[in-house]
Length: 294
Ligand code: AMP
Ligand code: FE
Ligand code: FE
Ligand code: ZN
Image 1 (spheres, rainbow, N blue to C red):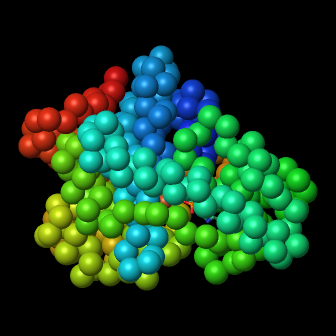
Image 2: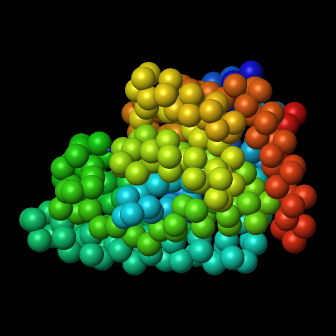
């Protein structure tokens, strides 16, 4: 059974509606899919309904925007209560910061001669509470400035390019604790991916486990080379934490991230569900969701 624990719908920066994402998961033969949109749980109810209809296992999750020493780090939270007030409040601040930065991204791009308006960006993000750089990219595709998201990031939006503006993000230690307090399971996404490799040393991962209760790390991810995967798996095994694998699928928004391209071993998934049960009982105030496992 293939288990894919990291995917995005158009409730954040994926391109597929939730029901289409689940249908694609069924077509791809996945046994379990986790929906982990950026900083929002908006798609969960629809995802669960579609997954029950398609008889695909469904794990509600969230990918939380964090920042350590100014470097972007992503935390996956599985099965937390998204309405647990301290977590809900932080996520709201992150989402507001995402939207608030759009005018400055647009004016920076205008300053380098790119034609773009805030409305063009927002038109690409209808129905999502979590606006991101990929929506800016989509607006640049729509108005003919670039051919696709990749070109938009390479020329304008990647870190260090003229249209890059960072947004408010949470300290990862605090985010790990918030996920646990909300009864969920915290797992660092792509620790040696694009930017986070600069700060996510083995020592830092160890401290997050010791000091904050980090439960696992994502190891099999397209941003990780074979050598990185081997090294990260060894780090997880040394620390006795869970290691996962996933596609980080974004629909048509990211090439080489097809559903199921990487997957999580069933034993690791079983451990994750055990930690979920343990963290939920340690957080009696949290209204944790249930995974659907047909
Ligand atoms: P944001 O959180 O709004 O700063 O945007 C970051 C998101 O942009 C990530 O979650 C990815 O989905 C996407 N992204 C980052 N780099 C690229 C890239 N080179 N090509 C396509 N999408 C990217
Ligand atoms: Fe994304
Ligand atoms: Fe990510
Ligand atoms: Zn992701």
